[in-house]
Length: 307
Image (tube, rainbow, N blue to C red; front, side):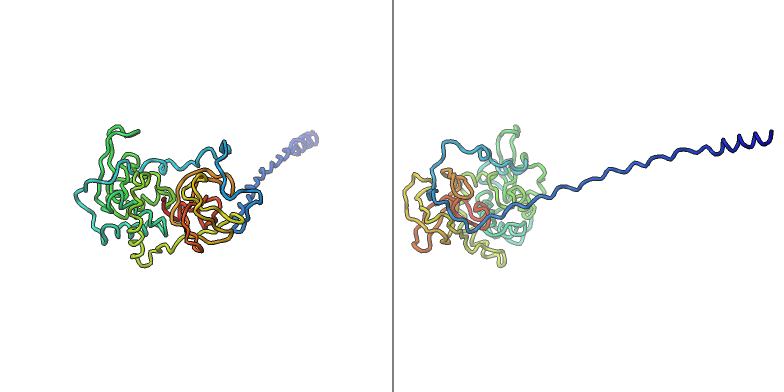
């Protein structure tokens, strides 16, 4: 009897629990490596069958039909009205005045070279470089109660509410906001005096102010290399319907004074409607050439002002 009970107990105790099967954690693959974009070649030659400057095609290629979108804050107008006509009471103390103030705080904000010159010219056109300047606007789209353009670069209080009054009427803070809104000086479309061309009348004075900075990295001249082979026509205006003032040979380094928009040119290396006003140093001839045939270190619109 005891033997039977013992055997029964051994049988019960000997029953084991089946081991749990381990489930391996799924492996995660890292992101696929992306090859870097090829650098823009500096020594390309024009295809033999390509004319030196091309007429606008009947239709623009689909991938060029729409301009690149910008962040929402950079797409909004910055100054709505024309130049400021009044000053806010309680001007912030600064160690420079007028155009030299714009140059000083613009440089501190991050503007360099020709974008700094453009920034100073826009500041002069907008506010006469007065940090207390204010312009009053009536109702506009999205601002039914009107708005104010404030400070050196006339930052609008309705379209840019994150720039409060304390910042807007502070010279350096206003310059910092202008640097951000203009994408570091590459987009001045939000400013009304840039679009109207008023700022261009201050470019010479602005360049002199930048030169006075002493270490402010004043522009020493912008140049480009001609890529059209064997030569490129220099036009009297920004398009192939304008007269030919002269020509410039492939590989020649030319001086670029400003840019403008004109006839769309589909040929070359960077098809666009941008035209550069250049001077051929060999002949002294000045005129316009399609930017697509000119190799520059950066986008020409970030290097010189608009003509």
